Every structure is written in structure tokens, then in C-alpha cells.
Length: 484
Ligand code: C2O
Ligand code: CU
Ligand code: CU
Image (cartoon, rainbow, N blue to C red):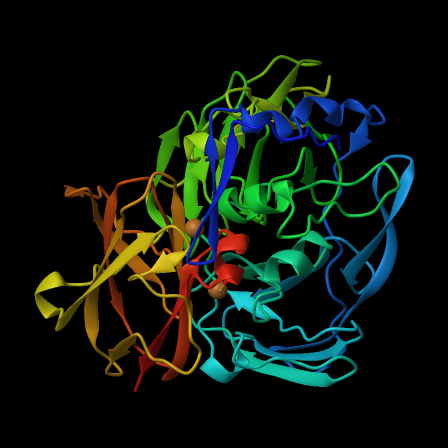
């Protein structure tokens, strides 16, 4: 990546350790553009990450081995990268499990730095959550043990969560998917499923991960903007092709594993029948032209094969302005292709019926709320503070129902994530949500306010909440919730 030298009109301003670039220069010119991503081999076919091998023979038990270790992997065509990988692959293997499963993960840290494995979105005991409270030292082993709660079928993911190093370790290649199946999934079993894990990265010409020193001009932009890359990965590949038969209906599960990039997903010539979000299926499917997917959010939708035999449609991310103007990338207003959907010349597939009710979602009752918490997001800070692991920011009694109000007082988006408990968004800027949905992350756009309701129905302990722009999280835009 080329780094333009800064002109004299640019000034560096540092506020409480948070650096802001100010000045008249088009700083965004320093950002790599997505257009140089063109160096790819044509026709890469879509591959789902492999699934973990279950070494248990016990019923309803999934026992697996997971190692985080350095690996040499080709991420960008023509070069190999000194990466980190889970079980030697990027993304790591998929944890494919069922509600009620007992899960045992024998984790080994073969990195030369501490790490954790965080099971993003799962309802599990606090000491199994892989939060920064429970680092695993280099060379150490740790067993994560938990049981998958009923009603939590959906798409989740796992990633490192060590203090101040999550962004670096994810950039080096540590992330993987989790799919939890329900015994009574209402969607037809015949639908082909595609797990699509989105990530982006910058890879230097020599193959090394372009991780800029936090004090370099690019590092300062990365820390404010969140680090974006010009290479857009789908399960570790660039622009793969998914085949679809005319008339076929496919079920896509998409994870945003990017550190900072927010995807505004649209499929050319198609509408999307959205059936689920972070915490699993909706009550009713919703027809959408596009879906905004902030960092760490997941979406499930049905792609209906309405295109012509032999035709191709691109899944794109459309322009979305999450940025502060001074660090907005030059090409932010360009649509970027993620994958291509290619119709075969097969005979049309017989239509399938999609149920109009998927499941019942119990509505958390606002009249039962016993406390309100006001959270203010500013640049790099929550309620004006950086994270301190020895401080408890929010205290709540076990089994309480509470309302959180998250107000973003600055000019860039901050996706807010709560560990351990799924919540239901009540309103955005006072406008009530149409449906109740289970979420664990909600994007709070610039100068907007979101309210959600949550019930701490199990699992007392210390839980993190934070901005899921990994650079912000690592910087300390995080707080601690104690449930007891
Ligand atoms: Cu994806 Cu604190 O987590
Ligand atoms: Cu999490
Ligand atoms: Cu943020």
C-alpha cells in the first residue's frame, strides 16, 4: 500500500490518547481503495469452512480440539502471509452444533502472546465466555465447557478477545463461525445452506499483514476509523462464485467478522427474504431490498432463484457512510462486490413453501423493567471513560429486566455489543421497532440513540459491553456489567 506523505496543512491533534486528524488535506487519499483488489484468479468457487471434527461418542456432546497458532497461508493471490490460524485455516472450522448440546473445547494457545476464545453471542457461564478477564498464556491449554441453551438456534461466531489485542489477532486470521440448529427448525430442510463469513484485510506486496504502527499516519487513521482493508474476503476467498439452480431457494447465513467495515448488503436483481438476525429466526420473514450488517452482527436470509439460467448477479456492499468526515476513505461511495451468484442451466427447481410464521418470540415487558441505564458513546469512550477491568460500570441483579439507552454523541457510528445476554431493541431515536428480535449487537449511528430491553435470566458474573469496532474496543471503548 502506498502512503502519501502528509501535507503541511494537516495537524495531528491528540485528545486523551485518542488521536484525531484535523486539517484541509484529503486524508482519505491515504486509504487503500477497494479497486486494487482486482488481482484475483477468475472463478473461485465458494467453499464453506470445514466443520470441527467431533471426537466424542456420547449423545448430545460435541468435543473438539482447537489450536490457535502461527501459520503460513495464502490470503492474497501470489503471496503467502505469516498469519495466525485456528486449526491451520482461515476462517477457523465451523462449530456446528444443536440446541441442548454439551460442548467441550480443548483449546491450545500456540501463539507467542496471550489470547482467549470468545463465543460471541452465546448464553454461557461468564467464566467460559473468553472475555479479557480470562486470558490464556502462550503455550497454555484451556478447556471451554458449556451447554447450548434452548431457543438460541442461530448464527454466531468466535474470535479472540484478549486485552487490547483483539483487532490485531483477528487481522492476523483468528475468527470462525458457529451455527446452532434447532430441533424444530421451521424452514424446509431441503434448502441448501451457505455460511458466509465476511472479513476484510490489507496485505502488503510481500504477503505480510499490513498492521500499521498505532503512531504512524495510517495507524492513527485505523485507530479512529477502525481498520478497514481493500481486500474483501468471503470465507477467506476473494469474490467466490455460488451456483444456484433456477427456482432454487437458498438459505444464507452471513457473519460480519470485519474489524470496522459495515456492510450494506444487496443482491443485484433480487430482494432478500430476511428470516433472522443475531439471536436466530424472526417471528415472521421480512422482504428487504438491502440489509445493513454492522460489525459482529449476523443475518439469515433466503435467496430465491428468480434469475435467468446462465445469468450472474453480484452480492455487493453498497455505500454506507459510517465515518467521521476527516477519515472517510476516498472510495466510500462506491459499491463493492463480495461474491457472484451464478445461475446454472438446469431445469427449474420445483417451488418450496416458506412458512409465514417461523417461531414465537416472547416480548420482554417494559413495565417489568426495574432499572434504566444510560450509556453515552463518544469517540473511544463509554460514559467518558476508558475501560478499567477493576471497575464495575453497571450493576444488575440476576433475573432483573432492565432498559439500556445507548446514545452516540459523536459523528461516526459505533456498533454496541453486550456479552452474555440477548436483548430486544425497543426504539431508535424514539421510533418503536416494528418487531421484537433477539440481538446481541446493535449499530448506533452517528448522533442517534437506541434503547433496548434485556433480562439477565441466568449466568451471573462479570460481562463486557463495548463498541465492536475492534480498534475502539482495544483502545478501551468497553465497560463491565456485573450481574449477581
Ligand atoms: Cu464479538 Cu466482546 O465481542
Ligand atoms: Cu461478544
Ligand atoms: Cu466505536
